[in-house]
Length: 237
Image 1 (cartoon, one colour):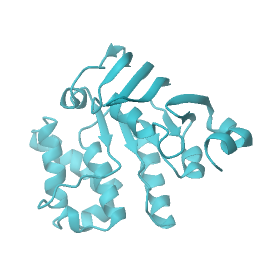
Image 2 (cartoon, rainbow, N blue to C red):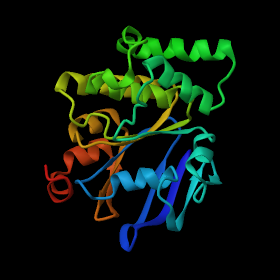
Image 3 (cartoon, rainbow, N blue to C red):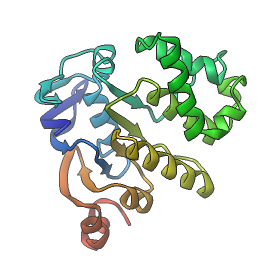
């Protein structure tokens, strides 16, 4: 098992957001966390990555406890986070955004850097076409690809991906789906938060359903796809 979250409780001020969330992700899996807006999906990812501290519970990565660590320390353990907001750095080109991510994650060998960037260009040919263009001038779909690529150049074992298809046209949703599948095939484990339920269940092996900060249902993607009651009650489908 690569990730284990045990009964975590997370607060924003006095608001009790996560109320005993537990989940597991095996190495090589893609697991989706589903739920309505405000259910606690993004807070779960932020809690795992140390952006929001947990008050109770434990989080283990490769068998070692990581709750209480700061985000930079968690990133160095080979966990990467693709935020919903994308957070492309203004004033930097596509290449410079990626270069900075590699420096932050201590990829300084020139041959290794070239190998990592070559792989990015193979997965994201659109980004290669925009290599010297400012990241903030890209379209929404291209910015999302850059955000995923930036997380990928740190050579993560686990990627936390938050709402990668939000606001994108159907053709770009399909492209992001293909990118995530390819990344998984290359050996990266993915914990995905996604509102596009049909797409998420097609590409993930298992899913958890969260509502009001609690896991209400878990199962294979096929089980959730066939469970109309769970969809109606918790996913508003």
